[in-house]
Each structure stands twice: as C-alpha cells, then as structure tokens.
Amino acid sequence: SIKYLQPGLEMLEDIQKTGDIFFPQRWLSSLFSGHQSDEAVQIVDKFIFEHPDYSVKLRNKILQSTDATRRANAILNQRKIEHL
Image (tube, rainbow, N blue to C red; front, side):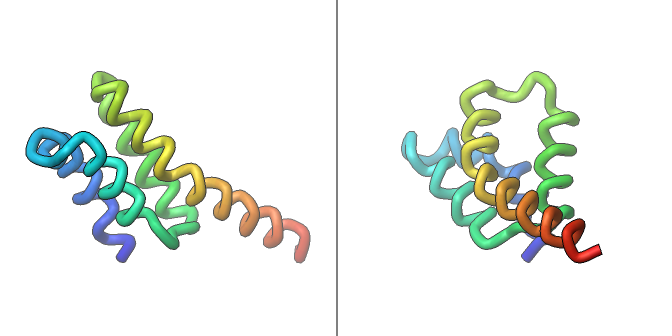
C-alpha cells in the first residue's frame, strides 16, 4: 500500500474542497495507518519539501497524521541500531 501514499497526498487539496472540514484528517489517518517504514517517512518529507507554498492548515494535518508513522519508524530504526 506504500504506492498509494504519494497519490493520496496529491489528492488532499481536492479532498478538502469537496469534503467536510474533518474529512482531510480522516483521509490522511486512513492513508498512513499502519505505515512505519523509512520509505513512508521519506514520501511525506519529500512532499512537504516539494510544496513549500502548501496550505498551512493542510500541511499541519499531514504532520499530525504522520506523527505515529514517524514515531514508529524511529523506534524501529533504534532497534536496528541496538542489534548491530
């Protein structure tokens, strides 16, 4: 499902325009639920970097929704280091 992250982020502005005020948050939470890989974090970071003029409100929703992804990724990476 990693292949859906980038297209899902690209659709976010349209989703905000056509949905209710809470739908972008639910969309992002569902999109990133269960992801913890380096690749998922890199997709988010790249998207934010490539869209410097993105809506602050939507940017913050992305950061909120991917916080668990980032935390899980950091824990996994720490475990990898400890096993070396």
